[in-house]
Image (cartoon, rainbow, N blue to C red; front, side, top):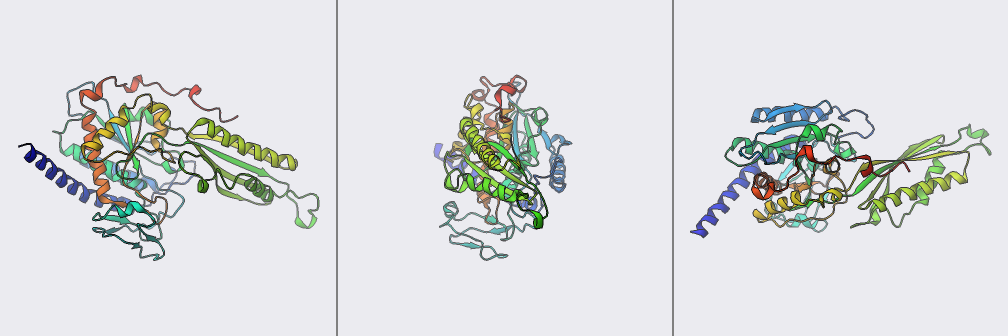
Length: 455
């Protein structure tokens, strides 16, 4: 009898996964074709007008599915509610989030998703640029996806699985819960944010508007990944003001800002403390943009480390280098401004690991072994967590993000969808309710929690 019940449960799960896969594929392809690239240089929110095309589409789809309280905020976030189906007044409000923007580092215009059915192994050459090849020899995770439906771009753009896979998963979960009111869960909040890729996904009003006790971002990678530890991050802007003069009369007068900017880059470590020379828990200093003229130059850096002490040291090293170059050429003016971006969510989550443990339990219930490794990046959840809403990051299946070799397994997305459905149920059980902090009781971040990054 028990064996028969287990078989029925397995058959039901296979059928559900298949149904999710069809919907996820259709949603993802539609969303991926919409150009939603964000722009760090823009001061608006969202940073690009084109993100509204997807944001407004999501508003309409949520309303059509029967979600409540659907709204598009003036800062570009979509919010909606799935009403509770349990009678427990103690069930916490759980939020599911994904971001709509794609990375500025590579073109997101004219994305042409291609579905490679029942991947049989070997290399996948992309038609618009045959030099762009996906190989399991280079990307071992691809070799584990035999039989899966693999989605790629065509070779000249990114795919946008980061994070339109998350968007498709959250929308599929929302529709499933709304169509099945017999599934037990507390109040669910749905949220789609802009500008995560440029570090501005969490507007100062969002934690209050979200009105959730706990949240999850769907912005992770391989199957089973549950992230509760991220980089801590700062940004550094270095400005070099030289002395400009006609080059024909420049003897002993010209101070070339480009030369000084190059000296700053050359003085910083090259064989260590850079992204290409670090891994694991090592932090880095990364120059990602340099522009200017002989009169003035601008250098932009990101500073990353898992620990605040390491982050402070990276900032101090950059300041010391700038000061040293300034001392050599006092006629120039070199400034180094460091601003906070986000902090390692572990600093808060390690005080209450229940959001992580329940996600792990949901994974194991589906036969998926959870993986929790520090991620060498950050998510909207990093900012939400430090603002009082604990927000681990969950897998979607996205791979090789921010470039033309980006790909995703439809079946990985289906597993993530199943996990989220299971997770919403777990949060309504007595085991989850014990000691839950309500949103209004969660301690908000104060000035004492932040680094004095101004020095």
